[in-house]
Length: 326
Image 1 (cartoon, rainbow, N blue to C red):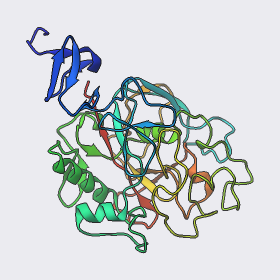
Image 2 (cartoon, rainbow, N blue to C red):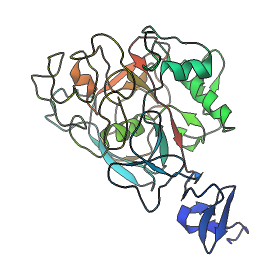
Image 3 (cartoon, helix red, strand yellow):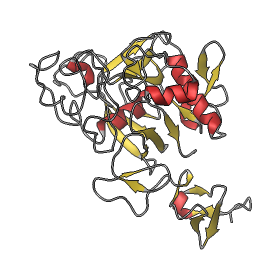
Protein backbone atom coordinates (compact mmCIF):
# COMPACT_ATOMS: atom_id res chain seq x y z
CA UNK A 1 0.00 0.00 0.00
CA UNK A 2 1.12 3.58 -0.57
CA UNK A 3 0.34 6.68 1.51
CA UNK A 4 -3.11 6.91 -0.09
CA UNK A 5 -3.95 3.33 0.82
CA UNK A 6 -3.91 2.25 -2.82
CA UNK A 7 -2.05 -0.95 -3.75
CA UNK A 8 0.96 -0.63 -6.00
CA UNK A 9 2.27 -3.23 -8.42
CA UNK A 10 5.96 -3.07 -9.17
CA UNK A 11 5.59 -4.87 -12.49
CA UNK A 12 3.51 -1.94 -13.78
CA UNK A 13 5.55 0.93 -12.38
CA UNK A 14 2.24 2.41 -11.35
CA UNK A 15 -1.16 1.76 -9.82
CA UNK A 16 -2.73 -1.51 -10.67
CA UNK A 17 -5.68 -1.35 -13.08
CA UNK A 18 -9.25 -2.13 -12.30
CA UNK A 19 -9.67 -5.88 -12.45
CA UNK A 20 -6.08 -6.68 -11.38
CA UNK A 21 -5.07 -7.89 -7.95
CA UNK A 22 -1.88 -6.91 -6.17
CA UNK A 23 -0.30 -10.09 -4.80
CA UNK A 24 3.20 -10.17 -3.27
CA UNK A 25 3.91 -6.79 -4.84
CA UNK A 26 3.18 -8.16 -8.29
CA UNK A 27 0.23 -7.79 -10.62
CA UNK A 28 -2.01 -10.75 -11.14
CA UNK A 29 -4.53 -9.66 -13.76
CA UNK A 30 -7.92 -11.32 -13.62
CA UNK A 31 -8.09 -11.61 -17.39
CA UNK A 32 -7.63 -15.15 -18.56
CA UNK A 33 -3.90 -15.33 -17.93
CA UNK A 34 -2.88 -12.35 -20.01
CA UNK A 35 0.20 -10.55 -18.82
CA UNK A 36 0.38 -7.44 -16.67
CA UNK A 37 1.26 -4.22 -18.44
CA UNK A 38 0.69 -0.46 -18.60
CA UNK A 39 -2.81 -0.97 -19.96
CA UNK A 40 -3.85 -3.39 -17.25
CA UNK A 41 -4.59 -6.76 -18.81
CA UNK A 42 -2.01 -6.68 -21.56
CA UNK A 43 0.26 -4.01 -22.95
CA UNK A 44 3.57 -5.70 -22.22
CA UNK A 45 4.47 -9.25 -23.19
CA UNK A 46 6.35 -10.78 -20.32
CA UNK A 47 9.01 -12.14 -20.24
CA UNK A 48 9.11 -11.13 -23.90
CA UNK A 49 8.23 -12.32 -27.38
CA UNK A 50 10.31 -14.64 -29.50
CA UNK A 51 12.29 -13.31 -32.42
CA UNK A 52 9.94 -12.52 -35.27
CA UNK A 53 6.91 -12.05 -33.02
CA UNK A 54 5.22 -8.83 -31.93
CA UNK A 55 3.53 -7.91 -28.66
CA UNK A 56 -0.13 -7.00 -29.06
CA UNK A 57 -2.42 -5.01 -26.85
CA UNK A 58 -3.89 -7.98 -24.98
CA UNK A 59 -0.42 -8.88 -23.71
CA UNK A 60 0.13 -11.87 -25.98
CA UNK A 61 2.78 -12.51 -28.63
CA UNK A 62 1.85 -13.04 -32.28
CA UNK A 63 3.40 -13.44 -35.66
CA UNK A 64 3.03 -10.15 -37.58
CA UNK A 65 -0.38 -9.95 -39.26
CA UNK A 66 -2.72 -7.30 -40.65
CA UNK A 67 -5.18 -5.79 -38.21
CA UNK A 68 -3.24 -6.31 -34.96
CA UNK A 69 -2.84 -3.61 -32.30
CA UNK A 70 0.92 -3.68 -31.74
CA UNK A 71 2.44 -2.30 -28.52
CA UNK A 72 5.41 0.04 -29.01
CA UNK A 73 7.69 1.69 -26.47
CA UNK A 74 6.38 -0.68 -23.79
CA UNK A 75 8.95 0.46 -21.22
CA UNK A 76 8.24 4.16 -21.79
CA UNK A 77 11.84 5.13 -22.46
CA UNK A 78 12.17 5.28 -26.25
CA UNK A 79 14.82 7.63 -27.58
CA UNK A 80 15.66 7.99 -31.25
CA UNK A 81 17.07 10.36 -33.85
CA UNK A 82 14.14 11.91 -35.71
CA UNK A 83 14.76 13.45 -39.11
CA UNK A 84 17.32 12.47 -41.74
CA UNK A 85 21.08 12.31 -41.74
CA UNK A 86 23.06 14.81 -43.76
CA UNK A 87 23.67 13.35 -47.20
CA UNK A 88 20.64 11.02 -47.24
CA UNK A 89 19.42 10.74 -50.83
CA UNK A 90 16.15 12.63 -51.25
CA UNK A 91 16.61 14.63 -48.05
CA UNK A 92 14.70 17.91 -47.67
CA UNK A 93 15.72 20.90 -45.57
CA UNK A 94 12.86 20.46 -43.07
CA UNK A 95 14.14 17.06 -41.91
CA UNK A 96 16.50 18.49 -39.28
CA UNK A 97 17.81 15.57 -37.26
CA UNK A 98 17.20 15.85 -33.52
CA UNK A 99 16.86 13.53 -30.56
CA UNK A 100 13.35 12.68 -29.40
CA UNK A 101 12.35 10.94 -26.18
CA UNK A 102 8.93 9.31 -25.88
CA UNK A 103 7.87 8.34 -22.38
CA UNK A 104 4.37 6.93 -23.00
CA UNK A 105 3.81 3.38 -24.31
CA UNK A 106 1.30 3.20 -27.13
CA UNK A 107 -0.52 0.73 -29.32
CA UNK A 108 -0.65 1.22 -33.08
CA UNK A 109 -2.72 -0.54 -35.71
CA UNK A 110 -0.48 -2.79 -37.81
CA UNK A 111 -2.21 -1.71 -41.01
CA UNK A 112 -3.82 1.43 -42.31
CA UNK A 113 -7.57 1.63 -41.65
CA UNK A 114 -9.30 -0.16 -44.49
CA UNK A 115 -12.44 0.82 -46.35
CA UNK A 116 -14.27 -2.09 -44.72
CA UNK A 117 -13.09 -0.95 -41.27
CA UNK A 118 -14.15 2.62 -41.86
CA UNK A 119 -17.53 1.70 -43.35
CA UNK A 120 -18.34 -0.60 -40.45
CA UNK A 121 -17.72 2.17 -37.91
CA UNK A 122 -18.85 5.29 -39.77
CA UNK A 123 -21.53 3.84 -42.09
CA UNK A 124 -20.10 5.40 -45.22
CA UNK A 125 -17.05 5.01 -47.45
CA UNK A 126 -15.47 8.25 -48.71
CA UNK A 127 -12.89 6.47 -50.87
CA UNK A 128 -12.17 7.22 -54.51
CA UNK A 129 -10.72 3.75 -55.20
CA UNK A 130 -13.63 1.50 -54.20
CA UNK A 131 -12.85 -1.80 -55.93
CA UNK A 132 -11.11 -3.19 -52.83
CA UNK A 133 -12.72 -3.12 -49.39
CA UNK A 134 -9.49 -4.41 -47.84
CA UNK A 135 -7.57 -1.47 -49.32
CA UNK A 136 -6.87 1.58 -47.17
CA UNK A 137 -9.65 4.10 -46.82
CA UNK A 138 -8.71 7.35 -48.57
CA UNK A 139 -10.27 10.61 -49.68
CA UNK A 140 -10.74 11.04 -45.94
CA UNK A 141 -9.93 14.39 -44.36
CA UNK A 142 -8.24 14.93 -41.00
CA UNK A 143 -11.54 15.66 -39.27
CA UNK A 144 -13.10 12.41 -40.50
CA UNK A 145 -10.05 10.48 -39.33
CA UNK A 146 -10.32 12.12 -35.89
CA UNK A 147 -14.06 11.33 -35.75
CA UNK A 148 -13.29 7.68 -36.53
CA UNK A 149 -10.85 7.61 -33.62
CA UNK A 150 -13.57 9.04 -31.35
CA UNK A 151 -15.93 6.30 -32.48
CA UNK A 152 -13.37 3.65 -31.49
CA UNK A 153 -13.04 5.33 -28.09
CA UNK A 154 -16.82 5.40 -27.64
CA UNK A 155 -17.04 1.69 -28.39
CA UNK A 156 -14.67 0.94 -25.50
CA UNK A 157 -15.99 3.62 -23.14
CA UNK A 158 -12.72 5.56 -23.31
CA UNK A 159 -12.34 9.33 -23.18
CA UNK A 160 -12.48 11.02 -26.56
CA UNK A 161 -9.26 12.62 -27.80
CA UNK A 162 -11.07 15.09 -30.08
CA UNK A 163 -13.90 17.57 -29.68
CA UNK A 164 -15.93 17.32 -32.86
CA UNK A 165 -18.83 19.33 -34.22
CA UNK A 166 -18.67 20.40 -37.85
CA UNK A 167 -14.89 20.04 -37.48
CA UNK A 168 -12.63 18.32 -34.97
CA UNK A 169 -9.99 19.77 -32.67
CA UNK A 170 -7.85 18.07 -30.02
CA UNK A 171 -9.81 17.67 -26.80
CA UNK A 172 -9.41 20.52 -24.33
CA UNK A 173 -9.59 17.95 -21.51
CA UNK A 174 -5.96 16.94 -21.99
CA UNK A 175 -2.79 19.00 -21.90
CA UNK A 176 -1.22 16.88 -24.64
CA UNK A 177 -2.35 14.08 -26.97
CA UNK A 178 -0.19 11.63 -25.03
CA UNK A 179 -2.40 12.08 -21.96
CA UNK A 180 -5.62 11.06 -23.69
CA UNK A 181 -6.44 7.39 -23.00
CA UNK A 182 -8.68 7.02 -26.05
CA UNK A 183 -7.87 6.42 -29.70
CA UNK A 184 -6.27 9.19 -31.73
CA UNK A 185 -3.97 9.94 -34.62
CA UNK A 186 -0.26 9.45 -33.94
CA UNK A 187 1.96 12.39 -33.22
CA UNK A 188 4.56 12.91 -35.90
CA UNK A 189 7.20 11.62 -33.48
CA UNK A 190 5.23 8.45 -32.72
CA UNK A 191 4.70 7.90 -36.43
CA UNK A 192 8.41 8.14 -37.22
CA UNK A 193 9.40 5.93 -34.30
CA UNK A 194 6.94 3.33 -35.60
CA UNK A 195 8.10 3.66 -39.21
CA UNK A 196 11.77 3.36 -38.38
CA UNK A 197 11.46 0.26 -36.20
CA UNK A 198 14.88 0.96 -34.77
CA UNK A 199 16.60 1.76 -38.07
CA UNK A 200 18.54 4.85 -39.11
CA UNK A 201 18.47 4.38 -42.89
CA UNK A 202 16.09 6.10 -45.28
CA UNK A 203 13.71 3.13 -45.09
CA UNK A 204 13.51 0.08 -42.85
CA UNK A 205 14.80 -1.93 -45.83
CA UNK A 206 17.82 0.29 -46.38
CA UNK A 207 18.88 3.52 -48.05
CA UNK A 208 17.71 4.72 -51.45
CA UNK A 209 20.20 5.77 -54.08
CA UNK A 210 20.07 9.01 -56.01
CA UNK A 211 18.96 7.16 -59.15
CA UNK A 212 15.78 5.80 -57.51
CA UNK A 213 14.04 8.78 -55.93
CA UNK A 214 11.15 9.25 -58.33
CA UNK A 215 9.22 6.57 -60.25
CA UNK A 216 12.15 4.56 -61.55
CA UNK A 217 11.36 0.86 -61.86
CA UNK A 218 12.31 -1.51 -60.50
CA UNK A 219 13.16 -0.09 -57.10
CA UNK A 220 14.93 -2.91 -55.29
CA UNK A 221 14.69 -1.26 -51.86
CA UNK A 222 11.08 -0.06 -51.87
CA UNK A 223 9.22 -2.48 -54.13
CA UNK A 224 9.08 -5.31 -51.52
CA UNK A 225 7.84 -3.03 -48.71
CA UNK A 226 5.96 -0.09 -50.23
CA UNK A 227 3.54 0.82 -53.00
CA UNK A 228 4.83 3.97 -54.74
CA UNK A 229 4.56 5.32 -58.26
CA UNK A 230 7.23 2.82 -59.35
CA UNK A 231 5.03 -0.21 -58.69
CA UNK A 232 1.63 1.07 -57.53
CA UNK A 233 -0.14 1.23 -60.88
CA UNK A 234 -1.95 4.41 -59.76
CA UNK A 235 -4.18 2.41 -57.40
CA UNK A 236 -4.35 1.61 -53.72
CA UNK A 237 -3.52 -1.96 -52.74
CA UNK A 238 -4.80 -4.38 -50.11
CA UNK A 239 -3.53 -3.44 -46.66
CA UNK A 240 -0.81 -5.73 -45.38
CA UNK A 241 0.26 -7.11 -48.74
CA UNK A 242 3.90 -6.03 -48.50
CA UNK A 243 6.72 -6.98 -46.13
CA UNK A 244 6.23 -5.37 -42.69
CA UNK A 245 8.96 -3.72 -40.68
CA UNK A 246 10.56 -5.50 -37.74
CA UNK A 247 7.84 -4.18 -35.43
CA UNK A 248 5.09 -5.83 -37.47
CA UNK A 249 3.75 -2.69 -39.17
CA UNK A 250 2.62 -2.89 -42.79
CA UNK A 251 2.43 -0.11 -45.39
CA UNK A 252 3.86 2.41 -42.98
CA UNK A 253 5.71 3.52 -46.11
CA UNK A 254 3.74 3.79 -49.33
CA UNK A 255 0.17 2.79 -50.26
CA UNK A 256 -1.43 5.96 -48.77
CA UNK A 257 -0.16 8.89 -46.75
CA UNK A 258 -1.21 8.75 -43.09
CA UNK A 259 -2.66 11.71 -41.22
CA UNK A 260 -0.85 12.62 -37.99
CA UNK A 261 -2.16 14.53 -35.00
CA UNK A 262 0.24 17.49 -35.39
CA UNK A 263 0.02 20.82 -37.09
CA UNK A 264 2.95 21.15 -39.47
CA UNK A 265 5.86 23.18 -38.15
CA UNK A 266 9.64 23.44 -38.11
CA UNK A 267 11.55 20.86 -36.12
CA UNK A 268 13.48 21.93 -33.03
CA UNK A 269 17.25 21.92 -33.26
CA UNK A 270 17.79 20.33 -29.85
CA UNK A 271 16.49 17.28 -28.03
CA UNK A 272 12.80 17.19 -27.02
CA UNK A 273 10.51 14.96 -24.99
CA UNK A 274 7.00 13.94 -26.11
CA UNK A 275 6.61 16.57 -28.87
CA UNK A 276 3.35 17.18 -30.73
CA UNK A 277 4.05 20.12 -33.02
CA UNK A 278 2.94 23.76 -32.82
CA UNK A 279 -0.25 24.85 -31.08
CA UNK A 280 -1.77 26.15 -34.30
CA UNK A 281 -1.12 26.04 -38.00
CA UNK A 282 -2.48 25.81 -41.53
CA UNK A 283 -1.63 22.24 -42.54
CA UNK A 284 -1.77 18.93 -40.67
CA UNK A 285 1.12 16.50 -41.04
CA UNK A 286 0.74 13.44 -43.27
CA UNK A 287 3.56 10.92 -43.51
CA UNK A 288 4.69 7.85 -45.41
CA UNK A 289 4.24 8.52 -49.11
CA UNK A 290 1.71 6.83 -51.37
CA UNK A 291 1.08 4.69 -54.43
CA UNK A 292 1.03 7.82 -56.60
CA UNK A 293 4.01 9.74 -55.16
CA UNK A 294 7.74 9.65 -55.78
CA UNK A 295 9.91 7.13 -53.96
CA UNK A 296 11.64 9.86 -51.96
CA UNK A 297 8.36 10.54 -50.13
CA UNK A 298 8.39 6.94 -48.84
CA UNK A 299 11.40 7.54 -46.63
CA UNK A 300 11.01 7.33 -42.84
CA UNK A 301 12.05 10.98 -42.44
CA UNK A 302 10.11 12.46 -45.37
CA UNK A 303 7.58 15.09 -44.30
CA UNK A 304 4.41 16.23 -46.02
CA UNK A 305 1.43 18.26 -44.86
CA UNK A 306 -1.98 19.18 -46.24
CA UNK A 307 -4.89 21.37 -45.13
CA UNK A 308 -6.99 19.32 -42.69
CA UNK A 309 -10.03 19.63 -44.97
CA UNK A 310 -8.14 17.93 -47.83
CA UNK A 311 -9.78 14.87 -49.30
CA UNK A 312 -7.34 13.24 -51.64
CA UNK A 313 -7.36 9.70 -52.98
CA UNK A 314 -3.87 9.15 -51.62
CA UNK A 315 -4.34 10.04 -47.91
CA UNK A 316 -5.57 7.65 -45.20
CA UNK A 317 -4.60 7.03 -41.58
CA UNK A 318 -3.82 4.50 -38.83
CA UNK A 319 -4.85 5.17 -35.20
CA UNK A 320 -2.85 4.81 -32.00
CA UNK A 321 -3.73 4.75 -28.29
CA UNK A 322 -1.64 5.75 -25.27
CA UNK A 323 -1.32 2.90 -22.80
CA UNK A 324 0.08 4.56 -19.71
CA UNK A 325 -0.25 7.93 -18.04
CA UNK A 326 2.58 9.63 -16.17
